[in-house]
Length: 472
Image (cartoon, rainbow, N blue to C red; front, side, top):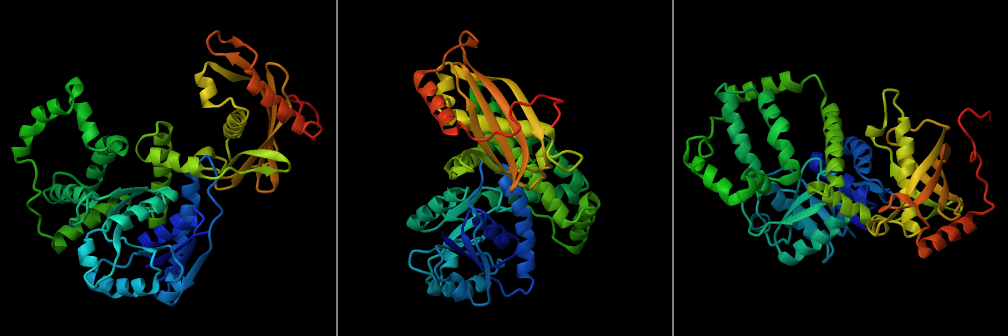
């Protein structure tokens, strides 16, 4: 197991701790703030609720979290050290040499700085790189890397292993890439509020109801390429390029940052969302991000592509009670209903995912379907035995009850922790996708079916063979 050290336990440092910890790393935290443990605990609570909900496969067992009063003790033995102290260069010049002195020669030393360049950070002879994440660190995959090429390459490999997307900046520049773009939008927004053109709430609506959704899955240039129609980007540039000389933007002009502007922005922001606590806003943000990223995952687009690649690298779950574990995951909030427990449709969805995994195990996965053959479900019987709630760990095992000719008879057990929460009995028929009629499976698939049926023969299957309304 790998070890990460987090120096500074604020919002960003806490997010880094959660990202590493929930991906199986031991995490050591150094922060002299007496409230650091409480603050990180609150961030972790949100992360434990949100990050596993992105995946249809279980994350690794959580690492061990420790807090240290001594910086050198926290850093010792760490493969990754992340500095996330306040954006004050003089403070960073004090902390980074202390980290470098305590860290091993192969440790990556990253700084979460949103603005300083590596040449500024390392003025005292240290070897840190910029590893600038985005809040919430435990959900959003982007990390901007700036600095020594070899160190950035090593850092990128580690970051991919914890489900993040490293973007190496080609040349160092103040504020890197993403924050420079955000700053441009922020400046325009300040002018729009100051000049009475829009409120903070109206500006946020303009973003989230329009281009924000487009940007989430295509970014800027791909969005504008489509706007150019069949002629593409060249046509878009020719059509809208002249607007660059029009007096639309005040990017080179900044409104006076005085108490009046601060009060105007703050009062409108309070009116917009002051009825919610910060923790409630964080959970709302996390739920929305999980939903959008899972939607993007289906099409392998944007952050969804990073998520899908990371999930594919997560370990398989092995066996439980002599049966293969065909699904293991955390129950997301989106699977629950007004009663606060998992909706009945998602018991079937969990079993369907388990069926898909069993089909992969017998050689009837995506490649088999692409060859024109598949299994169709023709009958299902579900027994609901216990409630399942959001955040519960759900484990599904699958027993092959029968594999005769075209028929595949499965019995799924859905476990909530140690408790049996449901059983789902499923009958499938092998089908030729060209004729849409039943057909014998390929010999290698038939052989695998028979092998699994033989392995499971004689095992108890209490609840199998029932029908709706049958007395217990």
